[in-house]
Image 1 (cartoon, one colour):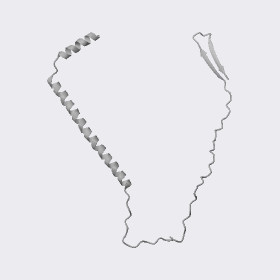
Image 2 (cartoon, one colour; image 1 turned 60 degrees about the vertical axis):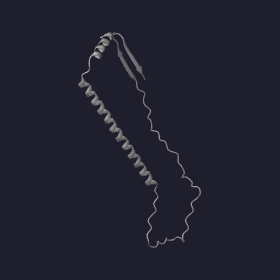
Image 3 (tube, rainbow, N blue to C red; image 1 turned 180 degrees about the vertical axis):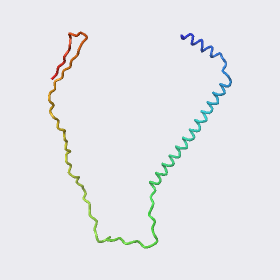
Image 4 (cartoon, rainbow, N blue to C red; image 1 turned 45 degrees about the horizontal axis):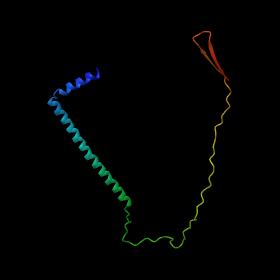
Amino acid sequence: MNEQEIRILLREMRDEPVPADSLVRVRLRLDDRIRRRARWRIGVWAMACASVLLAALFAWQGMAVREMPRGGGEALPIIGQHEAQPEELPLTITPPAVRPAIRRTPHRFAREPQSVVIRMETADPDVVILLVSE
């Protein structure tokens, strides 16, 4: 089939009327797809709003500062409040001494030289190629 024959077939198909039931089926399916897509959009927006609200709730809980409830009774005395002075921390802290890492290399044994012989035979029975290495 060449290009000209394809054009003729397409013109013939264009002139044929489309059955009404086929048009109805296509339109119903297209309408169903459009409605399904709209439902998905509503669901996606609902999930996005819910996740933003949940993140805001977690952030609010993290930032909220609550005081401990105080009892109506008398406060407990603090033991040794005036007796011991707190230790003063040094202004500079000396880091611990750092030892260099020890690198261990695996012991490699010296390999003995090995001789390799490769024999290649050709189509001619009188010619044989030998590759020898040491």
